[in-house]
Amino acid sequence: MRFHGYLTKWLQFYDLFRNSIRKNPGPKRVDPFLYLRSLIDGFASKAIVGILTTDIYDDAVSILKKWFGDVRVIERKHIEKLCTVRLVTISASTSGLRNLYDSAQVNIRGLEDLIVSESCYSYMLCNLLRKSI
Image 1 (cartoon, helix red, strand yellow):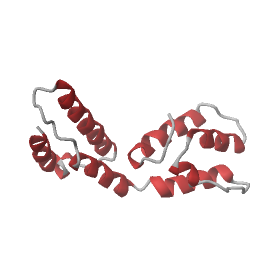
Image 2 (cartoon, rainbow, N blue to C red):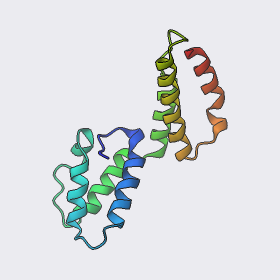
Image 3 (cartoon, rainbow, N blue to C red):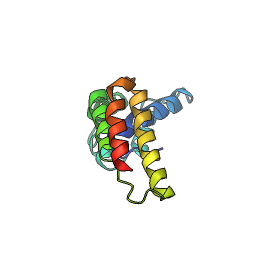
Image 4 (cartoon, helix red, strand yellow):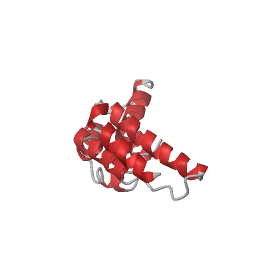
């Protein structure tokens, strides 16, 4: 999995990356940094350009966590995506309904991963989904 800088994808990416590093113990500190750098691009790669210290891996992870790991910002991004779901213009359109469902599910799972209480967004979500159909 690559990370392109999308906030809602950071936690999933970092969890997978961290687990892959743990399952391959023993590499020098530079190796995890090179592996990390090979998996990020776009806006995310700009965050760690120019890191040349002896603790490059720790520095890179710290910077990426600071830029992309703010749970409140990620939570707001999921809510924002739920608020801007595409309207299904033809209610008989199975692909439109499927896209609506998939989009809602991805962001609901993201909120659940952040341990956001369902009561915080369920009323808003019901209204939004009702208006989208």
